Length: 239
Ligand SMILES: *[C@@H]1O[C@H](CO)[C@@H](O)[C@H](O)[C@H]1NC(C)=O
Ligand SMILES: *[C@@H]1O[C@H](CO)[C@@H](O)[C@H](O)[C@H]1NC(C)=O
Image: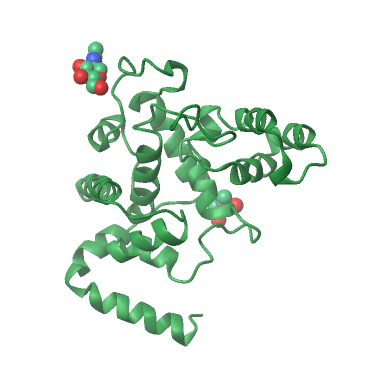
């Protein structure tokens, strides 16, 4: 049930976006298929890793990335084009088209930060603890330290547990649906899921500012819009 305040906000948002209604309907329709490597390349993923000379081990081609991304959308039940576009454009942006798996800039990079959505260490740690296959190792490495007292090299060792592709390409989906004290990620934030599913610009801005807690930039927005356009074009083509 919506509270009246949330509902009023939603009505306001909906009326603001009325001129985008048919577009929004398409965006909230469940996506019928997997994202392809050709689509990922159109969005900005690297077709090959020949230019990734600095950290070649971290680079994944669009073809390598696609199955892990599709598996993660499936595992975390993220089916709308609007949500998929927001998460996909985020990981493309944060990882430089899947060139990077760890934070490097400014050099030498922030300890413990990484995966394809470049999560900060506290979320890396929570993700590791939340992942049955690596949880015990993460807990053993951390010992009795509070998350803020874990030394940098241990932060990096815990990060390494979640860098394999099947976990790294799924961390944005985990963050959106499972992170935080509530273990519901951003999905419990009023209006968040509906805003992304409707694929309004306001919905995406809300995701960037109140889920990712970063700043809307023209670069991020352009990538989101391009990603959404590509997903919508494919979905309507398949329907
Ligand atoms: C590799 O990708 C770059 C773009 O990142 C492209 O210019 C180049 O043609 C590609 N090389 C091969 C061999 O496909
Ligand atoms: C996805 O949905 C299925 C079926 O409703 C459910 O069993 C599963 O736990 C959900 N996955 C997540 C990660 O919430």
